[in-house]
Length: 137
Image 1: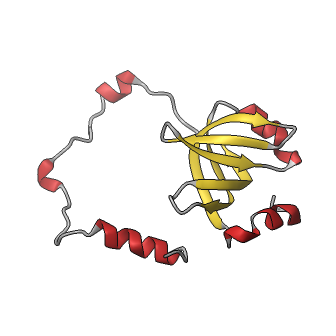
Image 2 (image 1 turned 30 degrees about the vertical axis):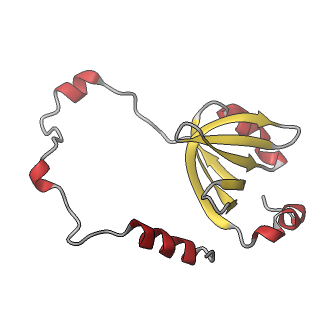
Image 3 (image 1 turned 120 degrees about the vertical axis):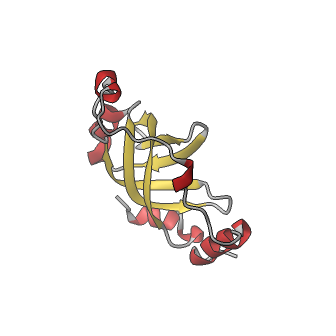
């Protein structure tokens, strides 16, 4: 859905990144063609969509959805805006308690099978690599 006006509006933010985000679709505004995707409770990703996607956005409002498109991320790893290219609702089978309780091969937690790092893990170094890959200091 990226239009020339959208590109000009975020030109100073640099190159957009591919976005694939899941969350609750809310605050759909057909007039402004905007919405919000609530991820992990309080984190919010602003969305923009084309006029042709309006009815689908209204239909999926308040649903858990997957959004793909192009977006920009701030220095504190928050989505500034995502231009929606596709939105889908994951197919989910309702939870069946009887099926769960009668599973002949239940998955159980085995602490002896935990995969552990073989050496210390430096979180700051890991984040630095991510920021460098994004072209930020």
